[in-house]
Image (cartoon, rainbow, N blue to C red; front, side, top):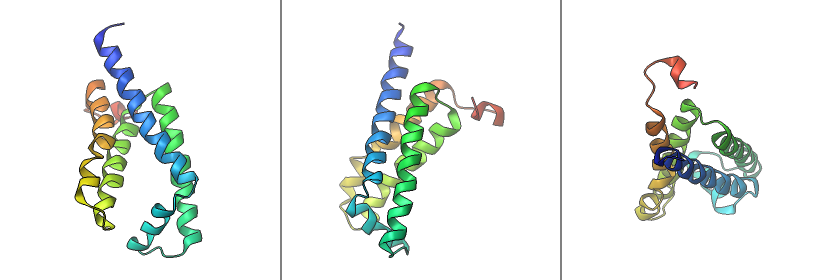
Length: 127
């Protein structure tokens, strides 16, 4: 196996691990995360928990997909979502370092996307 393939697999596993971890926490209805919804206008715990459950399903599905067949548009979403979930921390009152600590959450999917080749056409986004 060449170095490029090894790097690709390391990034796939890193991205999948991050999304599996977040997905499981979301499915469990992690209390702190449920509470964060109120910062964005969703104060009903039941609604927040349902949203979080849906997010957990999506995160787990994407984690599995990345291991089986990484798709560029999915990696772009994962980079965006990793950035957003890291940025949420200081927005809800946690230290900015909680954001900095999570740069790999968006950096790993972005690195895998760049390794695969940044798409130039819409069709390439779906490969």
